Image 1 (cartoon, helix red, strand yellow):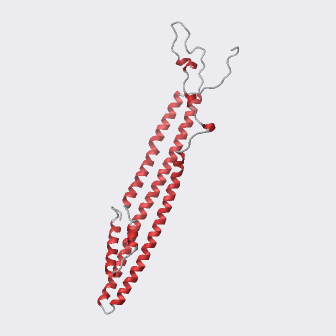
Image 2 (cartoon, rainbow, N blue to C red):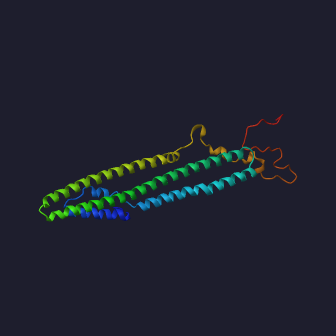
Length: 248
C-alpha cells in the first residue's frame, strides 16, 4: 500500500482482513489491489505544480517579448527589425505550445489523482459491506447450521475476490490509457529536441561572423585630416549583393 494512502483506503484493507479471519479464507486479489493504492494527494499536488508552471509562461514571457518588440521598433531598421519580429513571434508561439502541453499534463494528472481517491472510497464502501455480511454469517457458526454458514462465508469471499480482481484490471487499464495520452502530448516536444537543420536550411556560422575589413565603421580611425571611415559607405541590413556605382 502507498505510504501515504488515504484514510478510506487504509480502513478498507483493515476491514477486508477482518473479514478474511472470520471466513477462514483469504482474498487472493487483496495483495494485487493493495499495490495499486498510492498517495492521491501527492498526485494532485503534482498536477497543481505543473499548472502553476504553465501559468508562469502565460504572463512574464509575453510582457517581456512585447517590450522587446516595442524597443526594436525604436532602434532597429529595415530587414533586421523584420527578422527579429519574426523570431520573437515564433518564439512566443512555441511558448504557447509548451504552456498548452503543461496544462494538458496537469489536467491528466489531476484526473489520475481523483480516480485513485474515488477508488479508495469505493474500496472502503465495499469493505464495510463485506465485513458486515461476513459478521452476519459468522453468527450462524455457533448454531447447528455451522457447516452451511461456513459454506456461505466461503462463497462470499470467492465473490469478493472476483470483484476485487475486476476492479484492479479496470484501474490498470485506465492508467495505461492515461500513460498513452501523456506520451502523445509530449511526443512532439521530445521529437523537436532531435531536429537538426540540414541541407538548404543548414546554418553556416562562418557567414555570421563580422568582417571588419569590409565595414569601415569598424575600422580604426586614420590620421588627423584624413577622410572619415564612413566616407563612401552605404549601410545595408542585412548584407545584400548590390551593383557597384557607375564607372567602378
